[in-house]
Image (tube, rainbow over all chains, first blue to last red; front, side):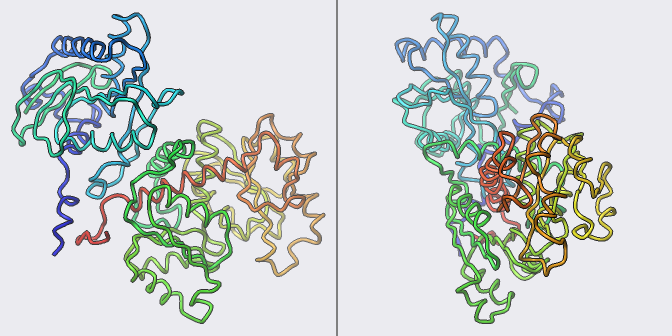
Length: 210
Length: 316
């Protein structure tokens, strides 16, 4: 007799994705097992090429690097944002502001998990007002993380434009959200798991599916 | 983490560090234009205060409100408790309104623990008699950790009215859990019997001589002389207490340069702490207040935001 509760009680798949990815490689028994880790869909070179292309797309769309802020979503969006910024700096010869955003407090599934400590939200001193903010995440799935990120942004200031860049879009959206820049569209079944590993966190670059 | 926060004993070291990490993020919210996080939206917290309090109650109130909870303050004055209602009936009544968390302050030691046996929502002890005041100890530990980097191997002197201090009891537990050594300094009349056995941790010591402890301290925590709990006779005169155990201007010179000074407030200026110490550059008194909001936000978040222990999930 409480139909409204079902959405809270059903753990979001997006959160499952994050829950797994926060495990350090050393604590994840599957991480080192080549077969159990699943099929590699993007290797280090693929990831590097995709990020180079996204960097150029962002520059083209923004007509340069002015007022650009690349905001990585924890955990793996943060190093991705830094890599994109490094690419853009190499092309344009100017530094690009980066930051990190934690959306834990804004999630719609807080009540279906034990609480965890939030990661750091770090913004440039100039803030986000009037900036072109590009949210950077690893895998776009249900869209609920991005929804939470948009809510968090509105509490932090008023960007001129917000865009979304993801390395992998695996479909199965539950909200009207789409990415502006996609590294790879990856058709998946809901039962499959897509994992991104990055050298900054996991020691190597690859995207696997299992 | 335990469902209630009644004592520092409810927390292990990992819990304390998780609370500190979260508090650091909450601290940033205080500097934002929009001081609001949606984590407790739709949740209701009652501050049930049977004892006078300004900073703790308002600190919990702000913390709850910044997390988007609805916060209601009930004090004993003007409530049914003053008409003779029992503690149990008061607790059951406010809980029956459908609240999600209860913050309790009471003059009787163990009151919060007792209430937690009766009701079905998380209970946070905001001070029970002379027993514990866990969120104060957490905010002290958090303030010191931010200042000193770590408490591992640091030496904290806690000075003053130990007998009546719940702040002291909670702090000894949390500071030693965090790896600090603690020396308790008090006049013999205000040192509880058997205090030496309270902590098994290494580095726990007691002293009657403030001047010999101050040069070795990495931080000094002054405790308020709680005249309201004293029936007299603990020391001859206020002036004599100040001479022996007050942090006077002269004693500041005994401290290593940069040693932080803490006081849980409200301060008796001129009694246990001189204005020179209270307003010194190394005084963290106001940092403690702002940290208090962040730490209480962190505690409320961890106890109330996540999944409920109850199988019916019906707290919302």
